[in-house]
Length: 403
Image (cartoon, rainbow, N blue to C red; front, side, top):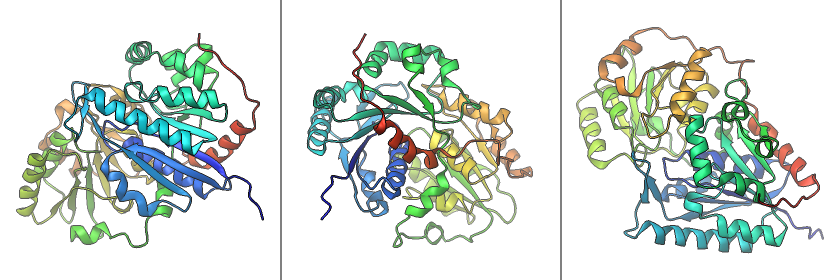
């Protein structure tokens, strides 16, 4: 009988804005669980909505959900649901993360976006794992973080470089340096740059393989034909009200149908306004949440969307004509990403401060062919990740001290 311990992989996503962190780590965990690694995967994330993805998780994978945080337009985080001081909620999250990782004993920990977690909540767990000497740690970064000066300021304030030097074996960037080379853009010091490996963008079509068979067809929920769909996506929805309202008031082309996916964090009063508008518009529908929006994106004629990493990857993966309306603030990440892809001819863009129904009507009235992406964009990140895991675990272990 083979009693060899399976590979244990833990993935942490901080949340705070939308569902992008969770969806990204979920897809990575799904792909690794289904690969030849034969791993046991634990996804540590926030948001009640994580329960909606349980049926899409393959055998050997589960999740631990944390009390939610919400980042406002002012850039300040607050508890999303609990009526407690932020400090107490962070303490709850930190203890839960440390306890889970202590028991799980991961061979690999993949941390999304924040080296020390939200408000340094990962510090106790990172110290524990380093002392145990078993776990390799990877920082996973999206293609664009923010403007260089803002990244430098934030990394200095949170002492991210010290944390990376002390705890992390590698940095995996889920992007293509031909689009945005963060080593050059952010002028990282050699101690950071030497750990960076560009994996490639994450092809969102892979998510179709993990759709639960019993999942409902969103087209049935919409009560719309399966052709002529124009889709409006606003991420988690907490700051997508302006785009959603403008889309609901735009004039749709003849023989087309509009659908707004508001996200679970759209303010209730805005959602009700959109629902009333849809009730009086026979070719408009509003959905609050769909566990797998790629079922809609794959069949849409074109897409109007904000500029988050996952959403843009979805648009490009399915080769859809798209108008990207980046988030106005507090970060410039979405604007930078949208502008790079506009320069490549992959998407059209509209400044978030200029979005209105007339601008959307004009864009919708023009013919828009599918972008020419094949061979021009590296979408093979998910294909490479299992081998990157194996390569990292095969390397000699090194002890790196904080400077």
